[in-house]
Image (cartoon, rainbow, N blue to C red):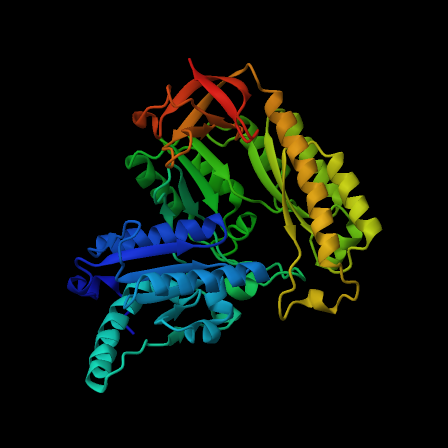
Length: 462
């Protein structure tokens, strides 16, 4: 297998059209965007809606059983809508269920977490092989797919695919870390992504500078467990943010998600006084019950979590704080959920990202005896989502009438042009005020009333 893209003959890619579909996290979106850029450099154009593609790339997620189902649906749809295309599946579901995915009708190539770093060589090789298969099939009266898959065991996932791209978005997503050494009882991500690893700070600063040269103003730092940054290079996440803060041209950085035990007090202090790191945090809690946290094998308790929230609010009173919560996990008896609800109710956070627990094959959680019914999961999710709406709307309402700087994004069809303040309040412009040239521009606005569904505040340009 060739492992040097400089040795690839790009003529096989010239004039080809590619379609992309991404499921899951911001890291996946970042990686897909990078794949798109790599193919574009080889002469491949992105297919527009309704146009038949020669290459279909599906980047999958496997965080829940529902995610697995959505992945299979997406694969079937891409195969159906693009007959004859070279269909490539990568991502977490492809790593965990490579054999199963490879036997989906129409799938040609399945790349696990190690192999996706060599996407172009694998694609080039697959083009040649698919052409040969097609010629043989035409001679025999039938055409078949390659059904080729490549994946390795968790301990052997060692590659790191750099990624700093925006795709069709305004913000750049910079991948600073991959993999995870935290084997929480409910999670399959370490098996899908491998152990924690990262590139050097020097290389990441270079990517941020390149984004600035391309006109980027905001970068979101992504990864699987980004607070674990430095395990490979002997550096630290604090070292990284200090170096990135000095990159000229980048006005804003956001930290996508940070484990509470890795969110150091020093990092919080730095963000409170930094030039470009925004007062915006996303911190996974998973449960507000210490007993459930122990069952999950999480590495902190509610006291530590509450300390981090208090410290952020002391240093940055207007900070937006998003929190991940999983409901209905095995062992979450009714009184433990009530403890979770009360804990969250008393926290000064802005938004809850609520996920119902999903059984994952091979996880240690399956050994926990108490099982929560689907009906109770739905009821608990509804209560927490209602609490989240109350907290978010109260946070937004407190800022009505204030001035703020908003980085605007190109409006999708049929929707209002919007952007975000430093502390991640979504702001919409009226159609009369919106201009295409406002995309990727930082503009001062006065924050007005809620929009029709209370998901944003109306902004008036100053």
